[in-house]
Image (cartoon, rainbow over all chains, first blue to last red; front, side):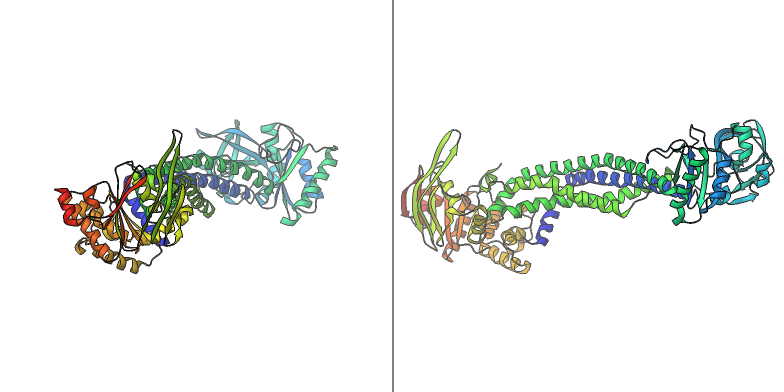
Length: 404
Length: 236
């Protein structure tokens, strides 16, 4: 049997029962479509988290209080319960480690912030001027917190564009205005440039104040929650990390670290492992509908084989071999899933686009997921088409011809 | 040349053994027109299945062009059916919603014949089966019974078989169209085709040149057919 004939037989068989073929294909379309859409949501989350972490700064090392925990559980960016790091630690790092370009200690917490009757709850971070360099931040208007501000524990604040919008409305210039953080008046001296990001890691939804001011008026202690360190280049990251560790160990006079140190790629790796799990989970849920679609294929093919028993008998009587019969039915099943796969990819793409358009979640349809979908749909055709095709090929021609 | 040597067929089931054929032997030369006649349950269908390479005997030899088909595997039997045998069934067994031409070309699809040659051979076969050229592209389910059976005959002819096996070919037709179909077979036989006609009706059998009668799995009579006029008299 030539390939051409096989396709002609298949298409005429599928067209003979348009409604049934269509519904069976629909099952696969929904399966493939949802797999693509779900995976795109997962991969979108992954890439947006990754870009958020990268936006933190370049060659970034983070030192946090609390004992080192195993990787994968270490994505806690808030102040730990332990308080072991001080401003002096940060100064020592800056002074004694050669591979360090800048050090930015900070202490942060969430506070209720008010201004002229409007209010918001946001993250308030106590920082030093080097924060600007370490975190790749830029000032949109006004000025940044200076050394003088820090030494004088000045009640000044630099706010992110989201906070500015929340408190003063769109387009207003907040520089020179007063805001109240935890019932204490602060003067706004600058606004940062938008950095993007959303949700918990929104870097526009911040208020920056001098670290000394934060310690004195907000936290009431001498500790910092994180020390951000930027290394001079990518290659010196490991060396810097080791030097900081030994320096802090000797300063704290302990043998087991009472702080944890990690770099950006560690965070990206652990965040990726979470989003990967999310992607797999979403894909697996959508995969269930794909399996159901596959069962639909098998159901249809079994019905078809029963309906066409006499035809199979005739084909065998005029010389069709087992292989001819089984390939005919197998190609029918694969054709169904293949058409379903193609339409499903389009549907998945549209769904992914719709989710990011209306749901403001980043989605990303990758070539891999499309190839995977095509492969899986073909495999489903073969797996679920194999049993009916084998059943057809095994029919006894004499009994098949007699079948009523 | 067809030769059956002491063919036995026993069906085994839970209820016990059923002997369908008990030592059937006969020869059919090329160009013969033989009717195998017998009441239902006589074993004629079993014999037809063996002759048509759809089934193999329990014991005995079936020589088709000097090949002993009795021991062939399923796929080898399929090759025999493809190249040497043409079937005509009582219920036509045409593919529905498919054109006449495509139905006739179907056996050639499995024989890997090129598209152009298929069409040529199918048209020749249809003409030989007395099918009207203007209906070549009609769908099979738009045809009358007589037309359908001619399409089926053309399909049986298209691969130039050694043997045409017709199983009650007039069973679903009225007597007038039945006669036309039988005449078609006679014409094909005059052209040199070997034809075996399986039937339970004496009148139909007498259209052949030789009649083999089977009863309880054994040949009870093997004689030349009466003339067509004599056959007509039986009918009346």
